[in-house]
Length: 137
Ligand SMILES: [Zn+2]
Image (cartoon, rainbow, N blue to C red; front, side, top):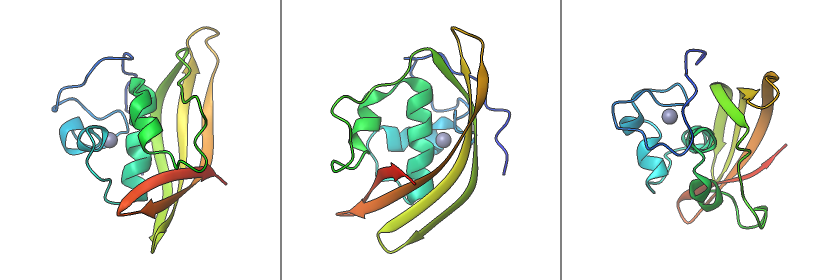
């Protein structure tokens, strides 16, 4: 799966439902939009995509709300100098209340012009029917 066409989105802007989702999925209104608005993510990949989109949009509240209270830092923030340019989900799985997602995310530092790719294997857990990000493994 490739989402290389996803464009950089100005931070702090609310997307309309028809806009292409920053995660590379379908329209925002049928992809990450409902999850960012508080709906339960149906699986770990959907939650991971919504968190990528939250990073791209600077939605700190969503990042905090979907981070396991056990591993969440006291001060959740986003690096305002980093633009997130595209997401590729390489693998995702869920077994019971445990989930894993492997992905690559392309970024660019607006200040230095430097760019690169972040690769991460993320672990997720479900509590009371909701998925939470736990940690990178
Ligand atoms: Zn999305």
